[in-house]
Length: 437
Image (cartoon, rainbow, N blue to C red; front, side, top):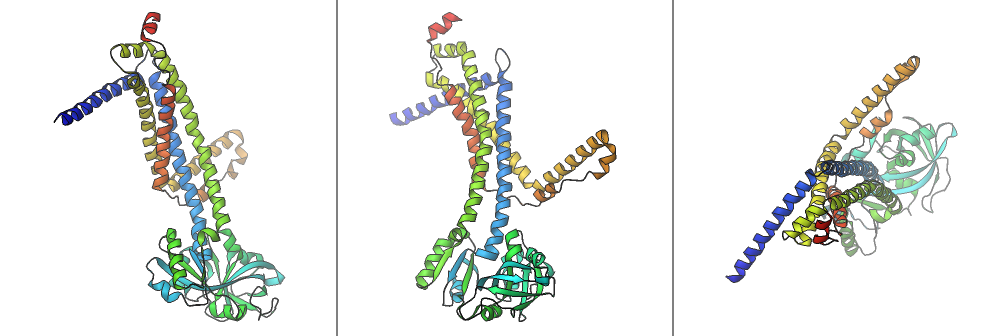
């Protein structure tokens, strides 16, 4: 019974201590002799809020920008897992619940010669003729801008839009796979590997548009030779399950060679991650600047409030409790800045297309008004900036973990600055302060 009473008394004292600490902290933030505390607190909260909002918007757009590339590469080029095997894996993959689809294919590098002798390097990929109908992810990323994805006919080929431009190929044109890195039983150079263009596609990744061309598996076996190695491209429901699926494949097929998307695209994805990290570091500097301002403002407040601090100590306030007044103030400053900044950042990110279109209109009319005042004869040539349209077309991606991390960093930056500024509280004795006053 005594223990229960002691625990109850402890929590009651903690509640009372926090109540007066919170009350004094709020009063310190709103009222002082010079009337500057409220302004300083508001500006600090605004700085943290705009920092959180900016970072959430920038990172979300960067996520969307990067994943637009990554999704195209995953669906068309690398897949989540690439398995090199002489055995038939399709039946095993279809029975595996973690696997979304499996596509057998061949691939080889080639020098393609088009109309008027124009040539360009290309990656020739032999896939099932039905892949465009059966693989939803592939179909989503491959947009046909001319013809159709029809590779069922012998010697038919579908090429990227930039590859078509470089070679001068059009729908119905003939292109020659002049140099082809196939097996040992086929010629490296040949003028007889002529294919008819039945479709031109476009994706969100420029390198694929400039280098990829698709033919059927049957044509691939004919062009690449009998020694060509068949590869199985496996797509997963969750890309993070790659290690688990690879382990199961190697257990079932010990002679197979499997490679994850993480290692196959290591350099490209590594560059994207470095770009994202550097951007986060640059934007995080906003919080550093705000934290320094909070630190300086809090130190000034500690000095200006030394009389009140002494009075609180004289009436029984402990040193830790007096410090807690300023720490709580720093927490509230960060909280009331970071949380609204987070909400505003998410709202802007969700409506990013509308925001960029609005910015495009504002930029256009501001430039138009300026030109009509400064140079009226050239005002007719003012046009909207097309880059805003490009940015508006990027679908932002919000990750909850990143939003929480950014918000917590905004709160903690203010909290740490306040704690650092409050370390010298009551450096003088109460009697000395009261005597000076």
